[in-house]
Length: 346
Image 1 (tube, rainbow, N blue to C red):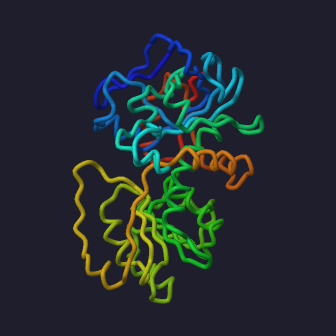
Image 2 (cartoon, rainbow, N blue to C red; image 1 turned 90 degrees about the vertical axis):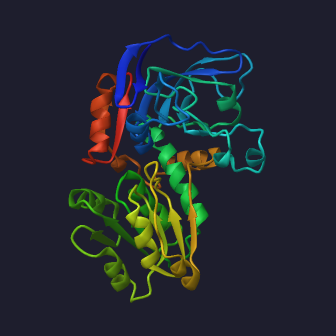
Image 3 (cartoon, helix red, strand yellow; image 1 turned 30 degrees about the horizontal axis):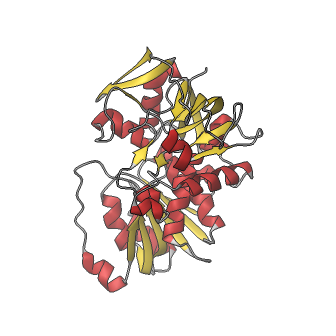
């Protein structure tokens, strides 16, 4: 089969590699769509301790089941499936507690397990027993199904942050993930959503997702503007959906007393943030994080996309064949659109 093989930092090549052979407990899927995530880009440039080259990246995927092991009952040949990233080991204390995204082994597609920037992907026994693999309806496109993975991450973050009826929600970062938070925030009860983004073109692209307020932080002071928009009280909920440490500092300043802050976007390795913890103390802020998602979030995301809540299609901006994987990565990194989808069969 043809696959994009990550060889070293800043080096990935499309090569012919052996097509995986499923055993009695695994499944082979023909990949129809795999979206480029920010974590794929970070691995490409900086590596990752869980990714040992040569490896196939890609974890936001969808495809058709073409071979099924004799012991597998979860899917059958011909099923259309969406595939997520985080795979619980199923045996540790975190997995037993139902929080497999905190599993200390931290298995993931495109990390320890070969991913979906390839014509075929193997779903091994652990993935089939415990991972985010869910059937999709015929009415759902491959592109839409692939985006169940990032939407699942949004659902996990929103669940942990506990948006309440009437809340004002701030989202710092207007990339695809940040913009996915907008409709989910409204569905969770928010009455006002404020989006902050440094890049004016990126901010303008985000307007189609219908937040109440859009703030370009390279042109005006975002903290002052949020305070102005909230009658001097601050926001009830804040998500930092970006890799900029400054957003963590700003989040504390624009937070209302007893606000919930979710440090959603991961920072580059080696980053450090100096914050005034007295702000947390005196405002009684609740500061947390969100990492990946659980298989149940992935199923919920598939269900929501199938129902058109949200309409996931506007979050897809570019398509590339597998042979142009490096161009796909450059487009995703260049922030010229929303989610970039690679189509290995194109």
